[in-house]
Amino acid sequence: MDSRVFVVHCGDYNQAGEALGELLAMMGGIGRFVREGERVVLKPNLLRAARPEDAVTTHPSVVAAVGRMIDERGATAVLADSPGAGYSYDERTLARTYRECGMDRAAQEGGIELSYDTGHEEMSFPEGRLIKRFEIITPVAQADGVINLCKLKTHMFTGMTGAVKNLFGVVPGLIKPGYHAKLADTRRFVGMMLDLAALVAPRLNIMDAVVSMEGDGPSSGEPRRVGLLLASESPLALDVVAAEIMGLPREENPLLVEAEARGMAPGRADQVEVVGAELDDLRLPDFALPSARGSGVGLVNMRWWHRLVLPLMKSAMSARPLVAPNRCIGCGACARACPVGVIEIVAGRNGSHARIDDSGCIRCYCCHEMCPEDAIDLRTGLLFRLVNR
Image (cartoon, rainbow, N blue to C red; front, side):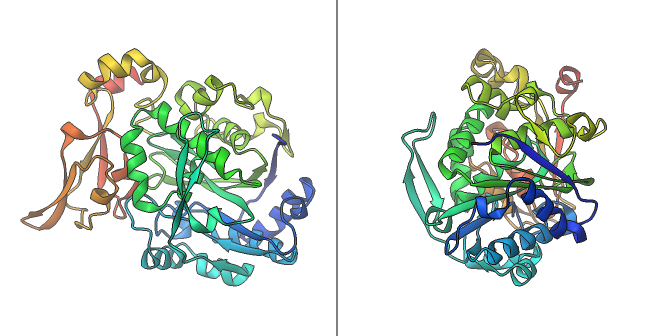
């Protein structure tokens, strides 16, 4: 696998088609990744139904441009994804997500088939280091190949979300919380993602970093114009460069820590060749990182910490999710997303709202991630702030 990362500047989504043409030309053209007559799944980041300008999801202009390239090659592009853990994987959810994220328009402009197949298949993966069997949505399981269209964003649980994390979307909706429950240890969770990425084995990974998300991503952060499109055959290499762009320290990036522990390469910036730009010119020193970074990385990746200290200091040493009753509409997305079932919808004076049992909370931040109203705040304690200064 070619681990080079290719970069082009793209100041506006109106230039996405031209910029992607330049990007793919640098890699030898779309014909290197797609053959005539194939059905190729485009897997964007469709975390939840959100407007394209919110930077929660892959922009439709990027999706449409890739679809056109595939159509011109004589292949069929099929868009498929399962939105985040708080949502059922059904036709109604997909229709709303496609509509609000602009995928209906992207499909029309790019000659893309929108998948409404909500089945899934169990796929054996004996090569997995941690997980030997995955539930995978049928369109991906049956595709001739997958092109990963990820978004550059921060992430409260894993520090960042890019090419590898985006592939978690091939696991059907309400099955996702089970992985969070079983793999509450962040290192184990990212280990699962590395296994999943190896199983899916996308032929090409393209990152939408024209407008990224900084702060408390992946859905409640702030849009940040970066003006880049990146691509690589290696999802890990793409994430290495993405982490360098946002300035996420390596010790706070559990994905790269685990990849190095497994002996995987490239896992460091000095192991990646960047084509089309100098890496030093891409770094953004003022990029806002997640407020809860460190709650699952760095020091707390050490085994003795998890076994002895974390059970006693979970509240003091992590960001605590709290419901803002004035913004909560009681939709239940957070309760459905919670992998350990510690959120309930209760009646209040001003209507129903969510309530979190903090004693059972595992700090996976699925509730914060999936809330469509941004009604889950994250509060850090004094000790956490002192340790993570």
